[in-house]
Image (cartoon, rainbow, N blue to C red; front, side):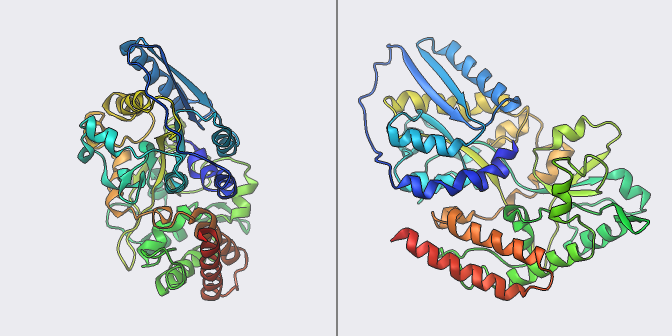
Length: 431
């Protein structure tokens, strides 16, 4: 899974969608093509060059061998993806199958851009029970499936075994707590001549999705089950979580967001500048290729309210204006089913539990740290409120920035202001 999913899909790609979607006139239905005729299925993604795109092309080639009358054309758009896709939708030139991040699922479904996949899934007798429930649910809106998962990751803690052993600390294991993580991070932080030469942990900074596991573990949240923000984003649990989060930064165990930015994209854990890193699966292959880096992966720690985790998801939906939806679904079923998942297992978490087992993901000690946290994944705010990305998520992220950059700011007041603003913006967006 690329950083496009975890960062770009949460920020620049989603911000332009709310305004452009109002221009769309979707829902066109064309007559299906003759099964024996030559069919072209167009697919778009935001992967850019890399293993993900290569594997997707391989899946397409395998499908075309089995279906000589079908041509699969893949258009990879690594930059300004959503802006281009929305422009194409408005012009009636969008591809048949489109990749989206989790923030767009409910929005595209609500606006009629994606078709409800339920009838196709039922007719094809797809066993949805084989999918991880929390992953499958991320592609749903109002109880109906609108996207099938491409890849996903929840969050976990990478730890440097050598640094832990040098500090005479026990390695992290399931059941550890946030207080234990904080204590270990203090002991793993090394100062030389008044300057930090090694940090205990790299925290997510102002990336709100990244700190949500901590938020949930302290009994907090950004949004309620009713889609409201006031009383939830500024709840006692949310205030406690953000207080603890800022305490870790103030204690100097984690590099500030400005310090991380100063490394200009260098992974501080990989470079030996930090003993732990809270993130997703995406850097694992680079870590495995790094000489002398001995590391493990631990599930997210337990907090006063239990365990919490968050998901980063990419899925594929079918354009409601696609000229041959049945043919598009047939490829989508192959792409996100056992055949495609076996190939995608080479670089990302798969969504089918049967493939996860046969590919060795469930027994891989490095992946187990992530998979053990799957039951703790909380529902995304965008599934509760389709305006969440442009309202609650954005406003919470701004509050998080204020709390970290202004050490003396009032956390409860900052969160209350953010919740009230999000509520106001949400009402405006739905009217």
